[in-house]
Image (cartoon, rainbow, N blue to C red; front, side):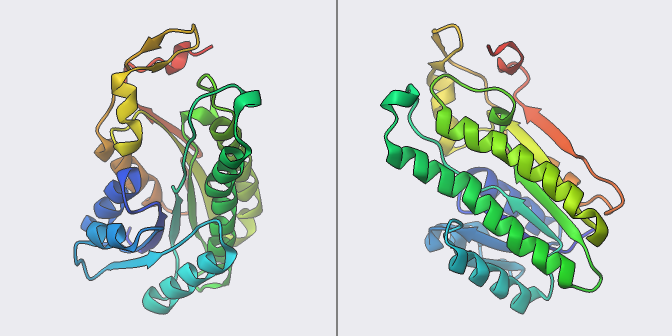
Length: 245
């Protein structure tokens, strides 16, 4: 299966790797991110790529992204809700409120706004339907120490996934979630150097190739709408997720 996918956070890391994987598989890809130059680098001049500088936390910017996608490609078959950010680890009483509001805007409000626009496009198009893939992160399952903003928003993504899965049924809109652990990217390099563990120690953690994530998302998006990988966890085999807490 091929079609048109919108990928947020497409200027680097998981988003860039996934966008390039979809382009290589013959999909049309709308690339969303804050940095226009980074999106152009991801596109690498590919004719099936549409870079659109986007602030996912801004309703007007998200509307413009989906309007541009529909104008160029005519429909939206999939959304990979991938854009997000973290914050420095610290106890909640030391957390700057700017960190909270910034992570909330990028991780949760942005995902809701993009899902809302994608759902509307998928419901209205003919043939009806599509798939929304949310990046939950393994922090949707278990927290790291001092991660209130990130973990709270990622747990909320699971609620969004479940609700959209239910609400999308009458319109052939499937929703699923990929929880990713330690994919090698700019955001995770600190893991290899050493990060706080639940027992108070600081230890390095193994990373996996980000291409594994891109392949998994493509597999999820390529299913017929009659089937769904509801929740998928893909992670570095030896990372300590199972032992957290």
